[in-house]
Image (cartoon, rainbow, N blue to C red):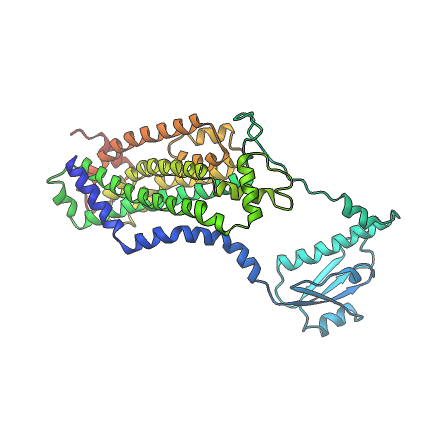
Length: 440
């Protein structure tokens, strides 16, 4: 065990002391926050230039009701369609609306002078649809129809409580939107960790094998101890990274976020955490936003998520890194590893695809079994945990995952102790099977 400890310490120190590790660890929470905010900023600041559209409306119903926006402006023209297409080339395009547009709503054509986009086309068709619907409603001769429609328009916000977990009225409401977004994020985090850190172990083994360092090391340490030390050393790097992220995110959620939030939003989030919020407290606020803020500022919930993330990252990494180490020992270069690496990466990709399907119904039989199968359980289970699944399912998944790691290490070590001495030939799967059957 002293030899294993030395190898663990060497692998850990070699990676943690790199500037790239420190920068990545500290900047990743900021990057994740930026990725969440970026879409809104892009939509806000990426507005295109104003597009002027000439309108030829033979029906006389649509053109007067078209409304200008930030990107589109409409102007009617008395030119014929042929003349407008030939003369108005300085406009973005010519919009033609047929005379029988009410009976034939498909008689609409846009002649663009440059590349159009789905946003432009959706804007135009959406306006025309609303105008035609209003025109048809006016045919019923109902007085104050627009006022009536505004008065009957109703928006419903529903709060969901887990009745199977608590019968108390002050239990916290659950947000399916928050759980879905969090499930996607956690599933992708597991997916990236398994691929990145697993590949890191494989590349490390290949580099040391090519430099003949392994031949010297195995003179004083068993190949099994060497592989185990390398796996656990890189695993500690992943654990440290997650712990740092957890402390940063908990600090932001518990200390910084409440200071930045408006008082009414923070009060509403605290009311959501305490139970059914009072109608006066949350009036005018988005319930989904309040539940998201309540989840981010609930330290118990955040700590639970990160503890589960740590356990599944560690277990999933141990399982896959053993296989990556075996592949790295069997080849002489990263290019040669591509064929042998395929059976390892396919389950990870399958887990990501299943995660997308499982999130639609987290309690289905499909979701349960793929969160128990060790090759897919880290990604799928982390996508399910935000939905407050039973604890026994999480414990069962972890037990199967770590038991599978023990068996995989035993299997991979048989390939590893033969592969580190093999040079100049890329083995086939049949040869790998023979290596597993060798007696020592």
